[in-house]
Image (cartoon, rainbow, N blue to C red; front, side, top):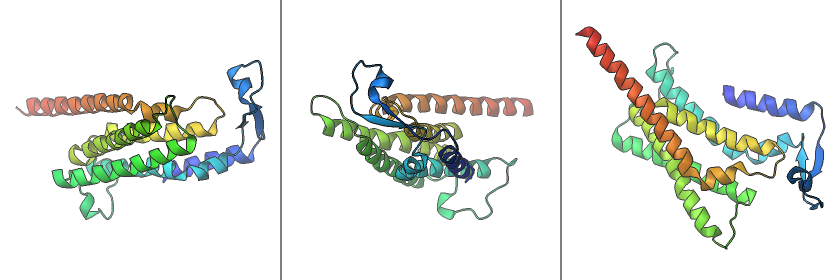
Length: 219
């Protein structure tokens, strides 16, 4: 909810305060000699872009909410969830963790494929269908794996970083640029997955080290 409120406040603030919208030819951004006739908008349409991409924002906020739920269940320093959800108890059983992670991965894949389609992500050579198939499988894996680690082993960092990746990806739509960060996120998902796995390994190692130190101190 905090992320939602802050993002909405940012969008409204940018939309309602100067400078106003500026229309620029793509040639200015790419430093081309001749105009292309393709216009992009700077400093404007924040609300429109926010509403059009609302489903992508919602997935990011949803994953952040799931991370907060696990944190409040795991750490005694923060208030616990008043009414815990029975089917979302953590650590979850292997079967339940697979079901939750698969559902979250499917949601992420559907929304990100739609987002790629809306942005017109393409490749030369006429193999767009192969790119979208590769991207869809990757989008499922990119979300399912950190979500499984979250609800099964209560590893916080990978799922948190995934939510950050999603929000940074969709936030790029607010800026006028010829670059498309979503093309990298959608087609190069294995790079992001590698980062998440490295982060998961680091967090797991730090936790085991902490447990070992506690056991050593007790003995």
